[in-house]
Length: 327
Ligand code: ATP
Image (cartoon, rainbow, N blue to C red; front, side, top):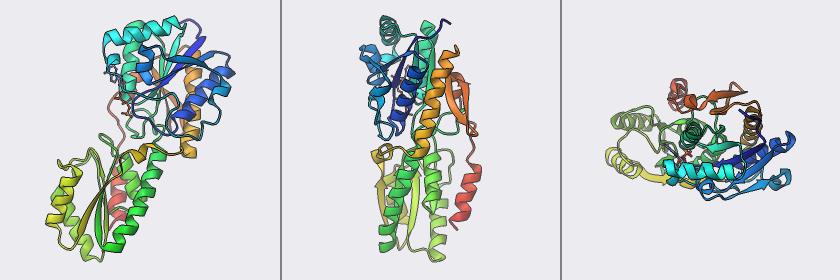
């Protein structure tokens, strides 16, 4: 691989707090190592339509503390086609760009890997998604902030739940990963937590709530991940619980997009800074088709194929802690 002189960076898929801090770190590492940096707007869609511009260290001032991504993010159906990826590659070549950094989730990494394999083009991925659902990294950028947002929201809902003897079902993000539900649920003192990785069964849930009621609980919080295994959506689940559980008024709250917003936590800012610098250094070392992650507090480089593999992460201990602390 020839020495990298011009690097492009884009954000793709769902936005996550800390993406700006990651872009900033990439741009400033490029400046530090004296390579040019191009910011691509609107993810792969912008790459296909040649929407990019040169960035310098000053272009990224005052963004480390901002949520979202100033480069904008997008979902691009055209990039899923070979033709779309060819257009994207043509634009990279037209702008003399010789390596690409993609900040996003597993879909974005799949696209990056295809582009790299089809055109022998160097790519590095940075995990940026609130879901924490990427293999090979302990944390993804945005996850810590989202957790804090969810805990704060549940704390507020608890105030109203306990004033009315209500049972609240609170839906949080997580189609495939229960990380947000489990950790925010424990942090906010939820009575029950439903996650995609584990099927507790609705009847067991009702039984457990009935038992809690007998021990003197007057209100309850149940945290439900979007992809939970109950087979019912959150409103159907709410109706079922109300029909089968005497003495409780059931309310449903879907936290939705507030979970993506807000200023990134200090943890996410530092993580994004480490991974952004690591991504540039990795490209300058001649590596490609890898993700920069964090494992046991150390920045690590893993093949994108590993990052896209099934997560080996186990929730067993956290599930037990949740059970024990909610008796
Ligand atoms: P999040 O986890 O926040 O949803 P993500 O990166 O997984 O982020 P996706 O919408 O799955 O989000 O993917 C982002 C973009 O990556 C897609 O809009 C598409 O352009 C590209 N992409 C996803 N899957 C593929 C694929 N199989 N082939 C080519 N490109 C893909």
